[in-house]
Length: 148
Image: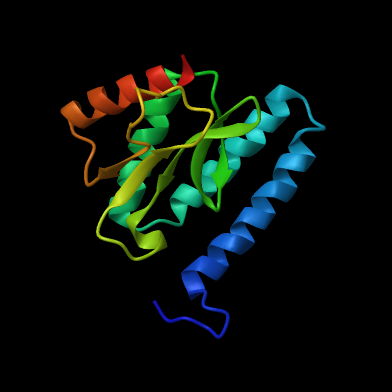
């Protein structure tokens, strides 16, 4: 990652711009009906997925199906330009594609609203190289726990 004088890489600057756009859209959606907000969020999520490379796109599409089935009340949206799903207006989980920051693997992560607390230590993100049956089952359980 090449850094500029401020110490941010091009990928980090792009993510900050995407986050600002996501916040503007969220404020706009707050004034709309839940159905309109969901439809716009779904369109944004699908547009973000379409921009991904083949491997990331396949995982993101699979995660969208998984989350939609496991927690249909979560609202699709974007988060720093990445596919995400929200509860009560706050991002609950998201997919950070490997290509976003040129990393070895994508991650499926959870934010503060997720109900995953387990003692004084618990994971909040998982590396995802593929969505086979076992991985789908595991992440489905994590999503269900997160919304419980």
